Amino acid sequence: MITALLAAEGVAKLGAAVGAGLAAIGAGIGIGKIGGSAMDAMARQPEVISKLMTNMIIAAALIEGVALFAAVIAFMCL
Image (cartoon, rainbow, N blue to C red; front, top):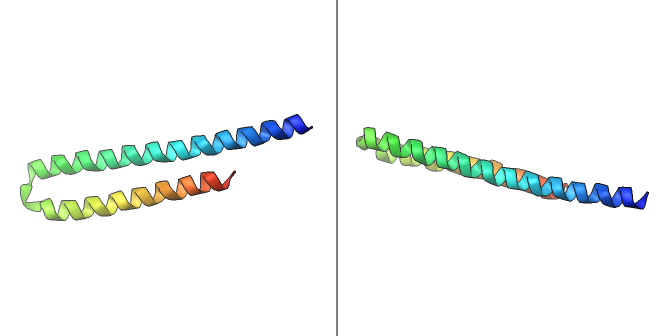
């Protein structure tokens, strides 16, 4: 019985670590896509750089917020 509880606790910790890792990887991919798309758009239309930068920063902040929320939830599951 005790070994089953210890195994379940270990699996829970592993799941939390994997969840936090996936949240970080997802945020990195999302911000990378935003940056790449913004650079493409800036190269095509240099006159809208200020508007693109503002939108890019807002989108990156939202992605980081979701990733932080996911990591906090993953660590709370411990």
